[in-house]
Length: 117
Image (cartoon, rainbow, N blue to C red):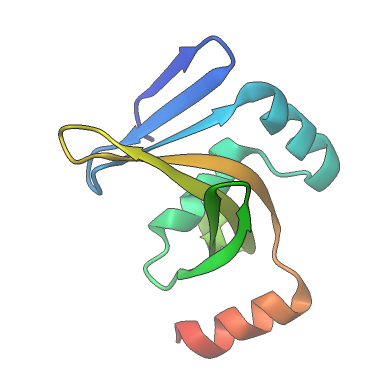
């Protein structure tokens, strides 16, 4: 797993191989687990899927929300993770702030299967 740090309500995980880090609001993570049964800690594994689909999601305020659809849990589950590329540090590392995560819908799973292989 990646190194993890907690600063107040923001939780950060660093992926050194890809030069980006994840962060999220821990309260939002708890609410997401209750609503969708999926924690952000598990959901970020979708970024490790070599067949993941990266897409624009929507614009909220002045932020462009992106989404990734990819396999997690040893490939047993396909998840959709919504995130914002929050900022780029001076070392070039991007910060991905996780907004939400859930199991992919049947249509999203079908599209993933058609594109991934």
